Image 1 (spheres, rainbow, N blue to C red):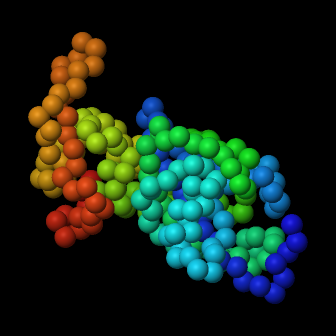
Image 2: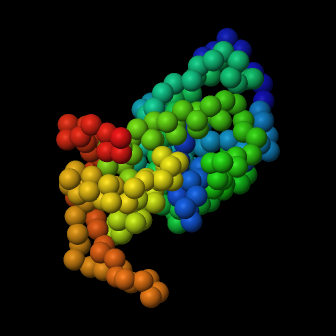
Image 3: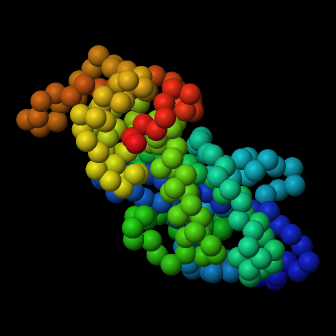
Length: 226
């Protein structure tokens, strides 16, 4: 592809996380075109003149992966002069969480789309590995100070499901009793009155999030899992 000489372009990239079988994963596409043709990358693309950044990243996610109706949060801008061989391109990065059972469909600039384990990523295009690393640090903070976990869990879940999600994102084990005590004190979730039975195990109470919209909890807490 011809270099964009003398021009400054703005793009968006999405770091979409999920947890599948207790493994934290990232949504990647295989690039159909140059530069980095055939290499995996984050979903994203150029911002149209009449688009807000959030509109652009949601459009690119849908066009390249089929993912839609997704919560996104802007986390930063990446503008190193040498980050893109086509010319000066600044990327606005977004963080998102979705359930792993979303239907994926590669299209437009994406030859393939897949979930890749965070600890086993393939070689990536551009500076996308750095963007992922930075996004993980943002996610670790968000999971402790907001109710962003609701974006990845089903509507009803057990406290074990919730703790497993926190452990996968924070990449460390949490004390069961202390975790449940803090979750209840925070009033983050509430009982549904239903129970979940799996095999011969004791029935587990099902919970749901109290707030259905993204909420910053810092006014009610210091750090949930400090």
